Image (cartoon, rainbow, N blue to C red; front, side, top):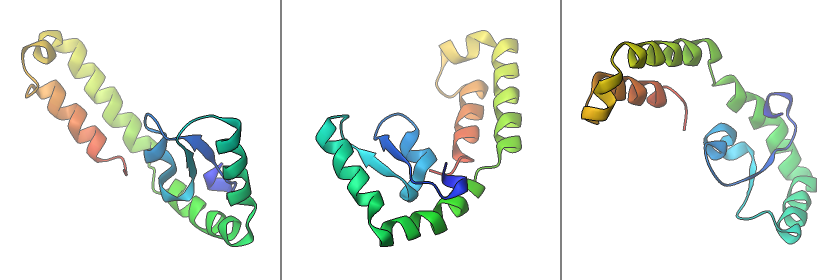
Length: 106
């Protein structure tokens, strides 16, 4: 949606904040009042213009091919060394996970 300049309204949980960046509207909860307030925010012209301009820029910062390569490499390593993760958070598998996550814009 952001790549198309469409407003995104999302709950503020999980990785959704990282994915939407500052171009999305986040709800603390999914109450009808919170949803109504967020819709009002995106209906304001200056907010829609900002989202239409910034959304595609933020979406373009994600390099899917690189992320997929890192994920596949990490999962392959995990399959080859299944006990590393259980032994220590400093294992090669865990370090590779952290490397992958650091390459995703937060």
